[in-house]
Length: 401
Image 1 (cartoon, rainbow, N blue to C red):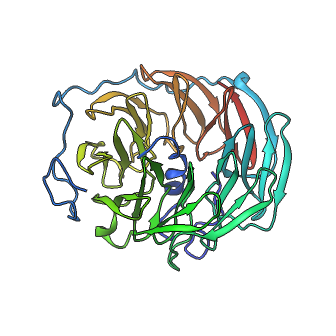
Image 2 (cartoon, rainbow, N blue to C red):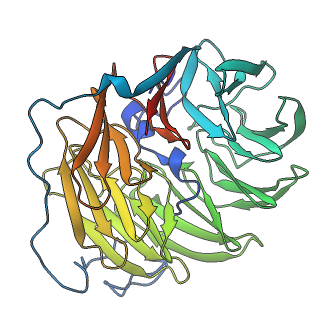
């Protein structure tokens, strides 16, 4: 995915590389991601949990798919259409429309997917790199000034409200999330909760450094935050919509992704080489999964579906399917190259990508179902009823599911 600039003076802090942002929490909406049960530490401890549960069955042999073919067979006939529209890679799809930034500037645009024509473009909003949140009322956009702006479906402004706390050391890159009457957004110095109808800021939440995409579920806002220069700052937060703190859960290194929520747990992947499952209600650790010791830390966005957590490890060449209750490995898929895309669920397959391939992996078996060639890395595929969409070099591509 293309992100303008990778230096501290542009859109990103120097520790947040382009690939780390690609793997971050822009896909957290709808799959949501303290104390520690294993280590028995105090909920306020800044130490990572000290034990590594392997699931109710204890140690077991890791299932694995067949070896990755040296040359993956691609199916170019699966590509249904392309639209050259100068769209940046961080986009959202909702109700037949694609929303995102223009690649040649800060304008926000909407494209009707039925005819692939531009519905509107708005220059007045200076959106951050994160894609907008969308519901039936309109769009919710975090701007480069840590302001949240809501537009209606035709691009007219509904309201403008104070966003999350800002920091001059970090650019605002957290993705807004909308659920019911509330909009939650992570920023460069914490997170905030706004009224979806009026834009009034209802709460501000703590967090040092960048706070990634929040998830709202049952009166609670879950998000991750941390400052790469402060080892004790990397935490998962659960905050009430009334402003109360539910819990905090410390991890051992940076969290360059948002949470995923499912099966009563919050799932996050940290650069400390662990994937964590945290009880959503209590903040107690359910399990943690250690990715292979020779990797560079686990940094992809976890995705939850039907009792399984899908995540790829920091070495970025292996996709794991983990049992959400136990943390046991269901299967592992060794990819032919580094995995650069946030996974997405498309029916019976989980879709991800390497710099050269869009890969659809069977959710049950871990076998490769189909593949399409790519020109370069993409951020994350988006799924509609009929297609898997992605953006590459400004072009929107639709692949038959």
